[in-house]
Image (cartoon, rainbow, N blue to C red; front, side):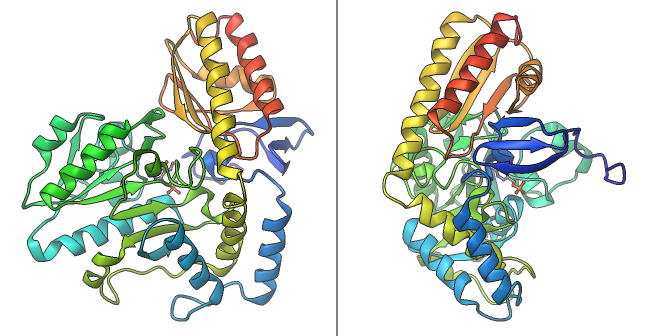
Length: 386
Ligand SMILES: Cc1ncc(COP(=O)(O)O)c(C=O)c1O
């Protein structure tokens, strides 16, 4: 383990998972409210995912993007049918999906001399240089400056500020997470999203929605933008898309596709057939009758339970979220709460210093949500999170 570069702080050694539970090398079990940071939407050990991976691995693991493979083409068709008329570029991660979106936005804007990009305060779009340039936090950016030029940041949920930042002739695109994840689980109001879409239209700028964390069922709808009734020009997806295998996707609206030429972008591994086969199994499940509706109901159950706790424990400043993407803002540090939960056999992550982020597998059971609520109640009674 010590041969790994120390870019992560970690100590737990995990060996297997089943449903919403993980097991460490000491045989201890953990109820998982992190889900591999929103990757493991179907939890662990899903039989259909495993069967799809086995079958595709036996047939063809990799062929490169110099050739077609049926499963990758089928996945692209399936995604565009679920989202909006578009074409898909496949890659391996969220940050790469963002890089592709950035390049396509610049490519589409180039003939008009549009190159500026707008992102929001507290945005997180990834760690590679392009996506990092659209990411707000100084701690991620500063050590690596200078970043990609031409990016402007704007306050969240503030349409007047955005109107002031958009430049009718220069802005190529506005990048936005419908629910900011790393930035503290901050939900864009429907009015804000609708207003951003309108301002983009008026300024001739593209709307790029980053649904890497909040997309694919997490908010109780297939895509989070559906809550606001807007459609993006470009959409980025990753995390749960490959059922735990690396897979990202950038969808570009059909009318814009003629601006993109052969050779404009590429990736050796992007759109791996095994990851695509796993993804088809994920989409089968997400589109099965009542699945996302159940995510919405379980999310309401979790939010209601947390709001009840907030009324009893003064350490909680705010509970926010949509579906099973939930943040609990504490008046003090959330780190002690994350640690306390782990000691009680529950895994969760922070988003910023003061927000406990809850991202269980979408298949989490109500009894497991109750288990989390009971553990949190007990911790707060001890004074954690103050
Ligand atoms: C909204 C969003 N965009 C992009 C990324 C980057 O994804 P990846 O870590 O797969 O590069 C993340 C990761 O947390 C994210 O939450």
